[in-house]
Length: 176
Length: 210
Length: 192
Image (tube, rainbow over the protein chains, first blue to last red):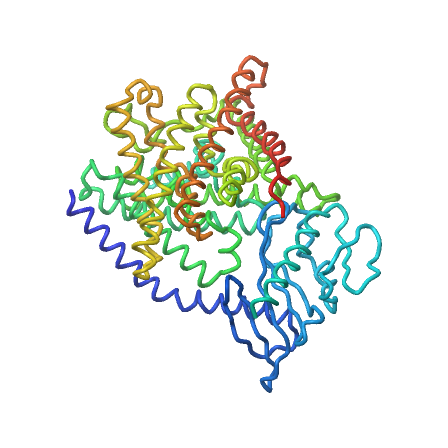
């Protein structure tokens, strides 16, 4: 009885170890590709980057082809309306402007809050001023360089994104 | 014998549809049918595990002692699920992400344990394979159909999007209506949730879903 | 504070049954009588808390340090199956009436996706030990809540003239859909 179970256990374990050997490099490569895509999107022109993990923050120092500093891509996360929102935001080399934003994971309401993943909303973060902290307006077009327009019917999701970014930028400015 | 095999295969597609008649595997059915491709992929992944574990269980049925059979089945199933999960993560990362934790949850999908206990452990390899094929196909078809309904209505391909379809509510309601429809088609006899436990532990009234 | 958030989130806002679709099979099967629902919920919560603790230990003390993440599913399910077996023996000896009333649904807890789902989600979110256990407790409470609300509704529903094809699973699912919709109202509770 025990023998049979042990044999099954060992054989399963062995088979899994082999499959894992095969799969692991591919899975790692997939993850690198994903991070690459996100970083290249929010800091356009990046050719390579250094990953820094410090004090709970993860960010990527982006370099162009000659190794010059282009900007930084920072991973941010926080509570949205219906769950955790994970996003990545890019700032330029002198931290004065955002170069882009991309939502990585969200569980917001489809058709409403989920629109934060749409290109239209994310495009607002290109060339957005990062100082003073960004704000959002409802129903009207933004009038200040650090303002974005919240999605109609999805104020809380939009506000969450703004808050998450502001909070993470504050932390990052202290930590870097 | 050929008629017997054909019957074993076909029953999973309609008469004993795991989703609409036996009401097994409800969790993934509701969770991943937000789109056609998700429903279909989950069906395929589950079918893979079902086929492999049914065959192995049938192969080893005379070797596994009765007292520990559930533990043994479960280890075998979990191993194949791990293989499927690793394969998806490696080659279909997007789908793996979309299906999320429901790929590993195939381990506790009552269809697989149910078929192992009720059929594969009592039949030869070929019938077990064919039974697994039919059940797996039936499950895949069910998931794909539900995924299609939810995706088409939810994304507004036919007019205004019914967002509720993508939400959990829509899943429950769609499935409920489809089962009712099945009941109507099948002479108004109702599909009961399987209280029949595939584990059939000694001391319990024997269960088994078939 | 963080633990309270996890609790409210798992029990109400992201209720395991109505939002994550974990634990549907017992939800459909056991929710027709309030007392059965309550005992099932209690037993499941007990297993949830225990398995949250044990799977966390196995994952963080054994699998991760030895670089064996691929053994997660196999080891978790073995833990869960053993725990349920242990709970069964415990109940048969110390609470026989409860044991008898649950009957065949007790071993069914093993295949309750909520248990394995909880272990996996906990590992995915890198919870520490206390977060894991609170998560398990919250999931159990939420599961019991959903089950009992459903049982209350179904007991009333039994007296209503439901068309034959809808009796049983279909009407339960549709009611669950409405319940899920109602629970969405809790969504803004923990927003940032």
